[in-house]
Image (tube, rainbow, N blue to C red):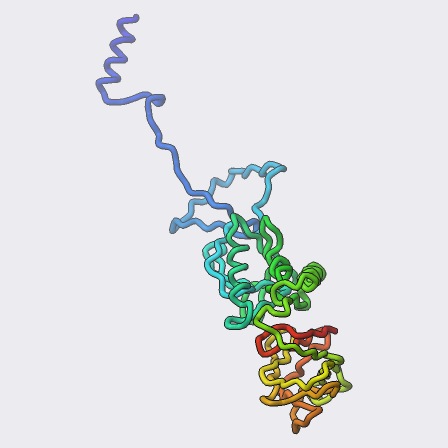
Length: 313
């Protein structure tokens, strides 16, 4: 009987066959990337093979942790202190830091703000958090940026490189950003340093009153919307090169060359048009009022660009 079994095995070998246990099957290889919970993974094959109808997918373990918001993000470039580009799941997006404003390119401290944002984003992981609005009118994502070192928006404000600014309805972090700004102001850092942009003039001008919400439609009574300044020093001040601006920095009034504020003489800057005098100047805006009825800040900048004084309401 043993001889018969041996002969059978020799015959099987001669036929070129092999047993199942001798077959070597190469291991399947794949590249796996984390997929956000709300994203559907799409097969790259022209036709994806459907699973058998009786296949039952196993439920994930109860302790499975979903990817953190922002998983798979790659920072591409930094535009300025409050805007950068990022790739999310293969799509490049512009991100605008919500709740803050930084100086525009060419302005005092603009380079410092941009470099600080580059530094704060140069970490292993960032998370993008949203409030009420997903995008602004320019199509940019509105986000708070969280890193292992803390919220980037608040860090820029605390450095004095950004101004805290409320953007309703996205007000979730307003209190945190306002506290950061108070800290920066108390420490005279960044833009709050009286000599941040150059040697300040030895004068003292105060914003004493803002009429931001006159009776009626603001755009129809622009000359009843105004800001009042007073020079509290003992000498007249030449206002050549001085600028009055709002919190957004998009609306700016440049004082006329050689205009002089006399000591203790109030000067009113009206939002509408009119004939300038020693006590009244005119911004002459059109289309909309200057000052936001829901809250704003008036900034008076000296010729070097320093914040000489501010007044909020």
